[in-house]
Amino acid sequence: MASGGRIVIVGASLAGLRAAQTLREEGFDGTITVIGAEPHLPYDRPPLSKEALAGTMPDEEVYLPLGALDADFRLATRATSVDLGERSVALDSGQTVSFDRLVLATGAHPRSLSGLPDLEGVFFLRTLDDCLAIRARLTPGCRVVVVGAGFIGSEVAATCQGLGLDVTVVEALPVPMVRGVGELVGRRCARLHADHGVRLQLGVGVTGLAGDHRVEAVVLADGSVIPADVVVIGVGVTPATEWLAGSGLDLENGVRCDRWCRALSGGEAVAGVVAAGDVARWENPLFGEVMRVEHWTNAAEQGRAAALTLLHGQEAPVFDPVPYFWSDQYETKIQFVGRVGPDVRVVDGSLDDDRFVVAYGSEGRIVGALAFSRPARLMAYRSMIARRDTFPDAV
Image (tube, rainbow, N blue to C red):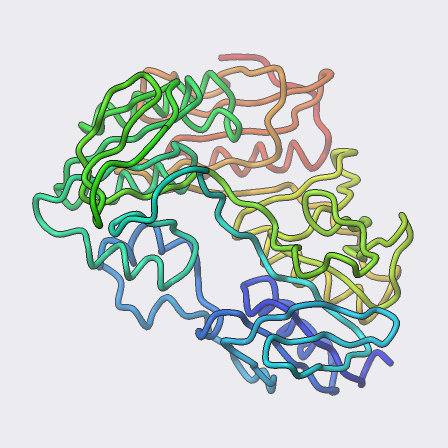
């Protein structure tokens, strides 16, 4: 069945697109149906917090090239359930789509904050439509409050500062991006914001929003009030698995998968069902860890890996990448490979400089590395992580 049959991809995302493209590249000549909840063809998400938000990228350039794909895209259509026994996906239109093999690539939803009123000027940033709606509000003199100092929040803050706007970032944790880069580098990221005139309110949560129909201020747990015309909430995402409830699939912070990206049910691989991208939580044998990675490179690589598994089963390579992501903030390119470990050392440059590399280790092995504007040096550490090299000495 490698060369024919019906494959349904739920999620018109980067991971879903890469899966479809790989199927065609590998000679699959059956039907491919792509179900997308948004009205848009697959597009690139990284520019949404940067060039697209700033208006420096033409809107049409955000879309990903499809190539000679020959796929049936069902857009503005949401999958509501899957029946693994009947091999069918139910849609919100009342229709069902039958499949022989299935790719789950539904991504993630932004987390909300409980108890906040529904006011104009308050946004989440996940979709192209979110980006365009925020951009329309970023007028001269606008006061922006970003809730959450993770990667998306930090990029939004940097973009708004570049537009000459008044920007404040509120973060409940004492250090920005601490979950993604650790405390040492997180403190350096805080300095990066401060050096560019962005105010940081750290270690304090948001308890409310002030305003009648439109947001006028953000109220913090310490009683302080920050005037705001636009509020962007970026406090993380949750994998989009609610539609899979009752399917029998193992849902544990995503769709639980094995090292071939095969979806599990009761701990066993389900024939002909794979997952990829932000929704997938899989076993990465390189790290001996079950992980879920919310970054562009992983979505692209895992979409391809999942498609190869559909076609070749366990003869396909296991999916054991060194995770990689980047973040452009102000004039700095932050790049990360691998995972955060308990041991942290500066291995190139100094944290006092604008260019440096930090390595992360665990049990004597290098497991991760982060660079500020040192792309060539970082790639050498990526190779070290893949080889399971020992943790390098500090400079």
